[in-house]
Length: 161
Image (tube, rainbow, N blue to C red; front, side, top):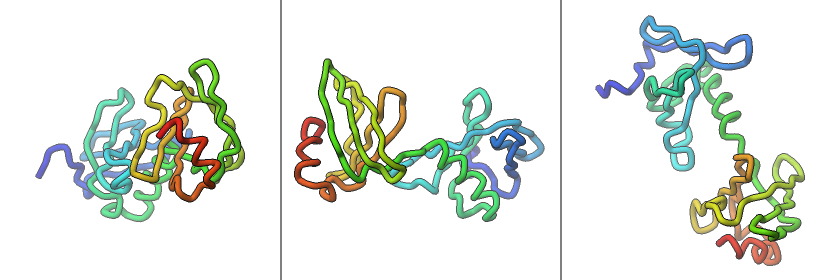
């Protein structure tokens, strides 16, 4: 067995008083761990790296479904916080000014305004119809299906495609 794979029979995760996650693994305690998806877009529930407080990888959980429902839910909650990505459903406006693009959009979490640097790789094409936009603060926004937007909204995105 790969030494980086965490044996699910030897691991226990617990929520800390501050809402973070601690871990006990084969007799070793970690006060705070952070789960990170190794394949966040193609396999979000599989291959979850567990990092310690210094951001060093402890090991990898092959599949969240291998854990008990409580343990999987605890890690899923942390992953949802870390990978919070509102989905853009409507583009109200995009203004290009002085090397920055200013977005005014509606997401599944409400109306939002953010800016991106036009000279960076802030807009990533995940597939023919799916985009990931990262703003100046590192927040991520997803356009799940460009084709689901109106033609007018799609034209506003042409600058980035």
